[in-house]
Image (cartoon, rainbow, N blue to C red; front, side, top):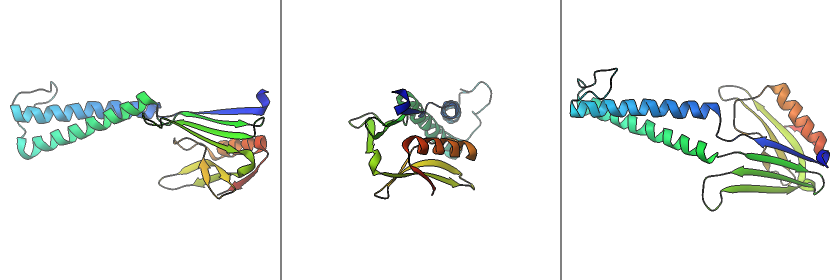
Length: 181
């Protein structure tokens, strides 16, 4: 039975890069916010710098604005980590002839995203490789009605040989052809 069902887990927003950028933005945002407040109250709130000499308008206001913006962005990243947005799995079931794509979304009525496709409506497995400033290496589920459903998570691009191996294994498992997009 295990050879008839394949499940690929997808890592969501709980990645090292999100933890790093969330902490970095929180620390930087609080520092900028304290620097702006120090210039307003003329009290040094930062132990490692003397920011009381900053002129509040325009320098202190700009520091407070950037600090608030940075800290707010870190709260957003923290919320996506807490809710684990984008995590889920792809399930390929030969017994039921179904492909299920399950992801977590933002809290609310449609928190869990479930896409189900019968294997008979799938035309092929597609690979899209684009290099350049924003490289993209993805595996797609190509449906007969010309829709292309991405199967790979948003992450650092994997090696081309690894991507081709994953796509070939999936195409062989589902008995579909493999095509280049």
